[in-house]
Amino acid sequence: MKILIVAATEPEIEPLLAHFNIKRPFDVLITGVGMVATAYALGNYFTLNQQHLVINLGIAGSFDRGIALGEVVEIVSDNLSELGAEDGDAFIAIKNLGFGESQYYTTASLGNYLTNAALKKTTAITVNTAHGNEASIQKVMEQAAPQMESMEGAAFFYACQKAGVAGLQIRAVSNYVEKRNRDNWKIGLAIKNLNNFAIELISSITKV
Ligand SMILES: O=C(O)c1cccc(C(=O)CC[C@H]2O[C@@H](n3cnc4c(=O)[nH]cnc43)[C@H](O)[C@@H]2O)c1
Image (cartoon, rainbow, N blue to C red; front, side):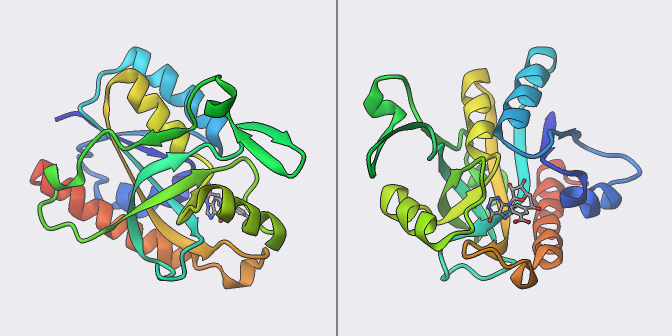
């Protein structure tokens, strides 16, 4: 099975690369941060390569305080929450403008690859500007009620859907979405847990 691991930055998957440093049973695509970089990198990659399974690994912010810092989750639906138009205080999503879709979904089933996976299935939004302001957080909660936030996820699902490729999005919570406070972030813990899960998943698929 041909597997592609997609991450925004190399440090997010460094422990996975170190674990499989002798004979790596997957390809790697580092896209850069953000939805534009991700869409370009994947569109380009998919025109040149055939994959059976593509896995997006990364850290993320959580709106949901029921999800612990460092917890690994599967994102199953993801929304381009900024794509649309303002109408005074209201927001009109791109779909309601008649110009397309902002909601994208996983194109694979984690249970097909790891039988006892106990990850929460969550919803997310994908943004160009990470939320760090109480008023804008309140507004997006009312608009989209997301559990998680990243800067790439919906673009990843979009590219997988367009290419007809099975894609999973797995993220670990590095921070809660709140007024920006980097002292509260647990990036190291999130990367450790994310990579431990990825090693288990890839070992289960490839039996190495
Ligand atoms: O310093 C900041 O305020 C800051 C804000 C957002 C992200 C970063 C990063 O260094 C990580 C970039 C990477 O991580 C994902 N990520 C992690 N937490 C969040 C979040 O709360 N909102 C959106 N994205 C997040 C993101 O997918 C990036 O690829 C620093």
